Length: 621
Image 1 (cartoon, rainbow, N blue to C red):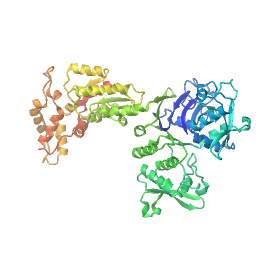
Image 2: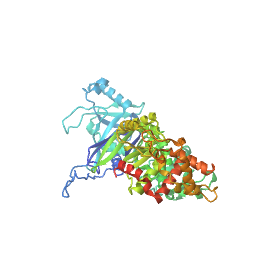
Image 3: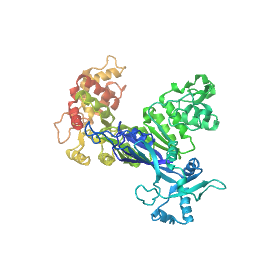
Image 4: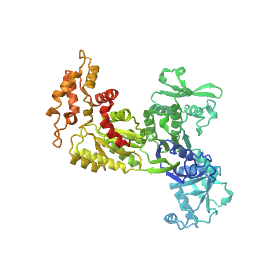
C-alpha cells in the first residue's frame, strides 16, 4: 500500500489546488522553513483540521472572510494482497462492492469485458487479484471520506452528477481455496465502504513529527496490543511484546545499534502491575548490568523516534511512514544510517520532509517535491531524482558537494579552499556586510585553471543552472588572474555568460605579501628560531627574490607592472618559509593564507580594499 498523490486546496499555506505525486520507496519533500513541508505531511496523515488558507489573495482586507471549504484528495494503491486483507477485516462478512468498469473503455476492451455475462465479471475480478486497486479519498471541510469510493485504477461509466455508480458485488471465500466469487445479493444491503476504507488506511499511516515523542509506562504487556498507535504512546507495551519473540527482538536491537551505535541494547523492564519502562543500555548486554541502563525518558529526543520508526519498519504489513525534518533530532551519521536501513525495505513507503543534504544525497529518492512559499502561498514543483545524481556528479567535477551549496539562495564560485574561507572574512570586516543567503564555494583545489578545465567548469555550471531549482543560482565566478591575456579572459566571460571576474593581481596570495605580518606568523609558528623573525629579514628576502624570473615575469602587455602584482606569490611564500626557517617550516597554502588574512584584517584591513570592492560588486553591495 502506498500513497500515489495528494492534492490540497484552501488549507493553511496552500491556496491551491496544489498536487504532489509519490511512489514506492523513499519520497522527499524539500524546501525552506515555512514552505509547507510539514503542512503537506499533516494532510497526508489524514489529520487535517479545518484551517483555511490566509493570504492577501484569500483575505484582501481586514473585513474579508474565507468561507471556502478546505478540500483535499489523496490516492492510495492497494496491492491484491492488501485488497484481500481489507475485505477480510472490513466487518462486511467478507463481502465488498466495487464500481463496474465502463464497458466501452480501453481498459474493459483489453479484458474483453462487456459487462453482462458472468464470465466477464470473473475476468474483472481476476484482474483485481493480479493488479490491486487505487482508491481516492476526499476531504471536504471537516472529514475524510471515500464516496462510493472513487477508483482511479480504471474508468467507470460516466453518470449524471450525483448518481451513484453501478456496483459489482462479490464475496471473498477462503475455503476450500482463495478466490473471489460473484454473489447474487443487492449492493444496497452492504454497509458503506467509505469509513471502513479510511480507517483501514489510517492504521497503516504513521507521522513522526519533529517534536519529542511522549511514551507512557502504563501501556504495558498484554494491554498494549501488537499495533503501535499513531502517537506512539504504547511504544513500551509493543516492545514488551516484541522482546518475547527473541529472534525478532534481536533483529530489532541490531537495527537500533546500526543507527545508533552507542546504544548496545534496548529492553523493557517491569516496574509493577501494568507498569514498565524502556531501558537503554549504553554498555554491553553481556555485563548483565541492567541497573546501569537508563530510562528512555533520560535519552536524547532522537532515540525515541528511532525506536518507534524501527518498530514500524519491522512490521510485516506495508506501512506509509511520514517523517518530518529528521535532521532536527538526529546526527548526520545516524540519519544516514537510518536512511540506509529504510532503503532495504520492499514493503514500506517513506515520505520525508527535509532540508538536509545528508538525506537528499543518501536516500536515492523515488520522488522529490520542492516546496516554495511565494507571496504567502505554497506551491509544489516536482524534481527529477536523476537531477540529484547529476548535480552530485557535476559538483564533484568542480570540487564541491551538494552539502556545500544546498539551502543557499545564491552561490559565488571562487578559486579554491583558501578563497572560500578568506573572502567571507573580507566582506564582513572591510565592507561591514553579511553574506546571508549566499555561500562562497571553491571550485578547484589547484592554483591554476587550465583552459580545458575552465571550459568544463562552465559547461557544468550551465547544466546546473538549467535545473528545477534544487541548487542555488550562481552569482558568478571570481578567479585568480594568472596573467591571462585579455583575449583569454574575454573567451572565459563568454563561456560563463559574462559572470566570470578576475582578481587584479595574479592570485589571492599576492595580497598577503606583508613583511611585518609574515614575520609575526613565522615567529609564532617556528619555536626553533631563537629571537624570532624580524620584519627586515622578510623584507630583504622579498626584495632579493621577488623579482626573480623563478617566480614569473611581467606580462608582455604590461611590462611596467610592479612585481608584487604578477609574481607567483604561492611559490614565493613556500620558498620564503623554507629558506628563512632553515627548512623547519613549510608554507601550507590554506592554513597559513587564512592566518595571514586574519592578521592583516586585524591591523590594516584596507590592504584588501581592492578585493573587497570586487566582491561587493558581485554580491550587489
